[in-house]
Amino acid sequence: MGPGLGLYLHLPFCPARCPYCDFNAKTYDHGEARRLLAGLAVHLERIAPRAQGRRLATVYVGGGTPAMLPAAALAGLLGQIERRVGLEPGAEVSLEANPGALSTIKLAHLRQAGFNRLSLGAQSFSPELLHTLGRRHSPYDTMRAVKTARSAGFANLNLDLIYGLPGQSLAMATADLMAALELEPEHLSLYELTLSPDTPFGRRYRPGKHPLPSEDQLADMEQAGRELIQAAGLKRYEVSNYARPGYECRHNQATWLGGEYLALGPGAHGHLAGVRWAYLSDPTAYCQLVEAGGEPLAMREELSQEERALELILLGLRTVRGVELAPLAVLRGANPRRVYAGPLEELRRRGWARISQGRLIPSEAGLAMADAAAGLFA
Ligand code: SF4
Image 1 (tube, rainbow, N blue to C red):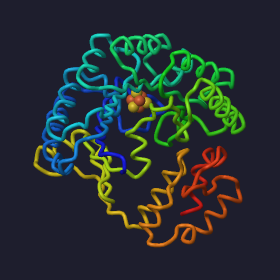
Image 2 (cartoon, rainbow, N blue to C red):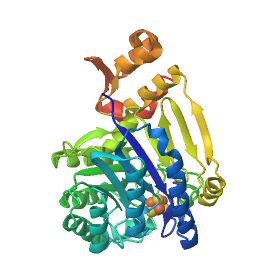
Image 3 (cartoon, rainbow, N blue to C red):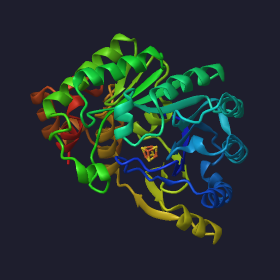
Image 4 (cartoon, helix red, strand yellow):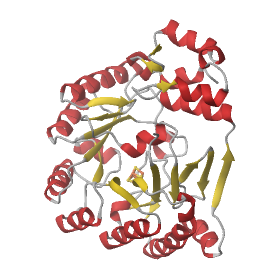
């Protein structure tokens, strides 16, 4: 049995725009948020039949900073999802949040409403680096948010951290991780800073050039981070993701396995039966189309069997589980060892992946080179 059906809901509002961020996020506007909440209710009703009677195994509310919306609004949205589509018993319901401005009352309300996994954007525990990142919270806010979330009943917490920051040394990156691990999260995501050309960071900094760490320093930070996290009992299951056994993010895992998920909200992506689509990223344009009775599509593509197989390979090479060969054989109608003989041999030669018990399993080196490994199949 494959992973169950998921739903990704995107709420694109943030208190302010961080200078490194290239997500679909914008500064909160009360009128726009109200209009979007009304639009989401209408759109949800329209897309619910696509579940074809299946209930949701996972819901992931991302952004933006979705938790900055009032708890009543978020609880209302989840209630509508439950009524229109339905949730499986024990469904994973994740919410992204930033550490500042999370009160005990708010988190208790959210927990009671059915959110059972909280993902906190800690990013760093250095006040200077948080300032550089344009974050509005302090390390103390993160510590307090974890405590508050625990007392509100959240037993499944993720912390996001970024390394490779301007002026960050190996010792600073290590200190960040130790501070995060002291909070005993069930899940930790450790991302390298990426520079997008359309952001203030992208215009200000050059990869590998002062004050950003060099390639070697980045590799040292990643390795030290990985060792520290694993020593704390969290296992790596994707290039950037670690969890205590049983706390892997089921929603994200399903998407990496080529699973199906509905989409809701500006810029949200969905996948059903080999069809991928994305909605318009601007909330106003999204709402206008929904209100006019239309489908606010920005993109829709039907993947060929070959493209679906390739996607499974590219996503699977980023995970410790690797790529299952049997579905590739079905999609390609041939033995994948023959179809992909060239890239498979190259992966083996470089020590990036090996085939074992019907799976193509990446090595540590292969995970570190996941993009290049995927490139061999292009
Ligand atoms: S809080 Fe997150 S989503 Fe919002 S602007 Fe900052 S990095 Fe982007």
